[in-house]
Amino acid sequence: MKKLLLGACAALVSLSLSAQQTYKELAEQAFHCVEQDSLDRAAGLFRQALKLEPGNAFNAELFAGLGEICYRQKRPQEAIEQYTLSLNMRPKSVPTLLSRAGVYLETGDERHAYTDYCDVLDLDKDNREALFFRAYINMSRRDYKAARVDYERLLMLDANHFNARLGLAVLNQKEGRLKEANDQLTTLITAHPQDASLYAARADVEKEQKAYDLALLDLEEAIRLQPDNAQHYLSRAAIYVKQGRKKQARADLDRAVELGVSRASLDGFMKENE
Image 1 (spheres, rainbow, N blue to C red):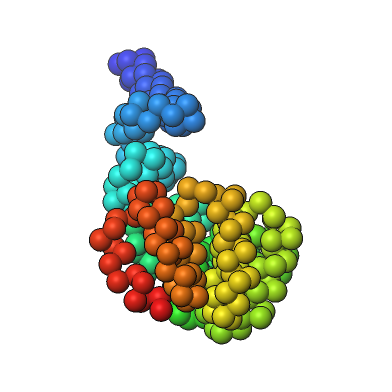
Image 2: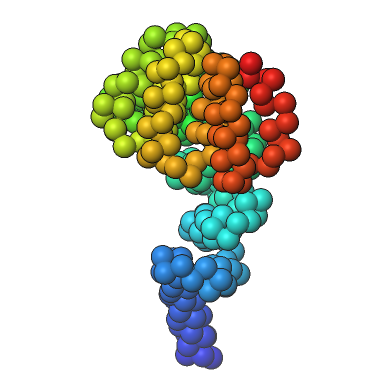
C-alpha cells in the first residue's frame, strides 16, 4: 500500500510537471504564431493555455497577446476587453497600458485613453509615447497650457523629436503666436525638405497672417511632393477665393472631387472662404 501511495504521488508530480511544460509550450507556440502573423492559430493556442492553467500569473501576458490579435484583426472593442483582463492581473504593465490607450484613442474614446496615458506617466514620467499622445489629447481639449508642458517635457528628452516639434508649432498657431509657429515650421522644413505636410502646415499659418502669396508657394510645393492629397487642393482653393481668383479655386475643387472628396460636401465652399 505504501508503495502504491508513493507511486501515485510520483505520478501526480509527473502529471503536474507535464502540464506546466505543456502550458509553457502552448504559450511559446502562440507568441511565435503572432510573430509569424498566424493570428487565428495563435488565438487558439492562447485560449488552450488559459484553459489549462487559469490561475497562472503569466496569463496577464496571454491576455495581452489576445488583445494584440484582436487589434490586428480590426476588433478594437474585443482588444480593449483582453487588455483590460491583462491589466486586472498586472495593473502596472506600461506596454499593456500603452496598447489599450492606443486602441481607445483610435476608437475616439479620448477620456479613457487620457487616463491610461496618465497612469503610464505615473509609472514612467519620461515615457515619450505617453507624453506625446497626452499632449495631443490636451490640445484637442483646448487645454493648451497642459499640452505645452508635455511637448516641452518631450523636447527636453529629445530635442529632435519630430512630432513634438510639429505639435508645438501647431499649438503656437492655435494660441495666435503665428510668427513663432512659422519660424518653427521653417526650421522643420529645413531639416525635412521632402515632407509635404510641413509645407501645408506653414501655408495654413501664412494664410492666417494674410501672406497669401507665400502660402500659395508652400501649397504648390506640397502638391508637387504629394499630388494626390485632396486637402492640399482644398487649402489652395480657399486662398484663391480670398484673392478673388474663383476660376482657379473651382479648378482645385474639381481636382479634389477627382481625388475622392464628395461634391456635396463642397456646397457653400466659395462663400465660406470669402
